[in-house]
Image (tube, rainbow, N blue to C red; front, side, top):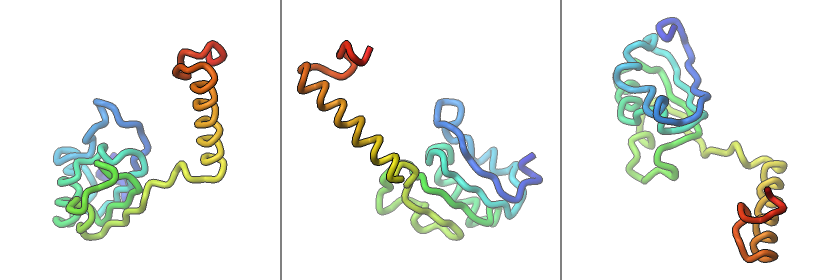
Length: 126
């Protein structure tokens, strides 16, 4: 199927079976000139393979909002590769997501200070 696709998007979790699922072997299956978009996890892609695929013209472009490691070091190969569009990972920055984080943090702190123990040990959380 990859040989026919102009755009491939990665939208899956990272675990042992998906780590570096885009690598030197799988990029050979891509349609020449395809675009790869990764909004899942940076470690789904082998970073050096992506950079080489762009240099060689196998991929026309790479876009994503995920890096590995994150934050990326200043010498990360994706910072200087051609035909890429990288943005900060911002999926959790909506106002409602920020509110949920604040509420959860408050609940954790209230439990800790009220019971002097971890949230997982609080009876009200069981």
